[in-house]
Length: 196
Image (cartoon, rainbow, N blue to C red; front, side, top):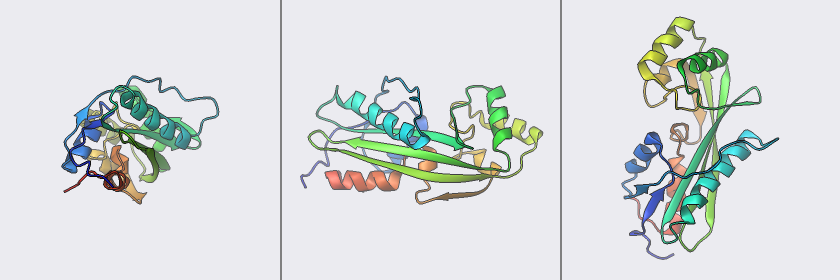
């Protein structure tokens, strides 16, 4: 294992949440937003979609930055076999949260890491989120407070979103935020990046 502790690291994302997560590890990095088509393929499952998009984001940036270690990630939200994206608007967020009320929703969070001269490391984490029964007025109050319209599932778990749940089940609690840090740390150590 070589010493890559000073390797240039790039997070292939424009996500504020993922940036904040990676900063927690004490790793110096830059952010570059990947430009890819995120449309799901026909018959592609939620886990396949998250894995493919994490890899495509990673590789889109790695192809332009050969000497850097690149991290890509993606997340899909699934209920009753249907993939739910970012709501994008207040109205769509109300509809999503009404659908999720009293139900268990699954989130697949994928990460892909490419070192300059090595293989890609990939992982997909499953998180189950149990929503309590939500009244329309509390959904409205929550959305007005957090405005989570660019978040998968229509909530911010790092903020007031926790108030919507009865339980969360995951092997890695950081995954729901968008980046599974436990597995990412394992990959970075294997590559040779020092993590304080």
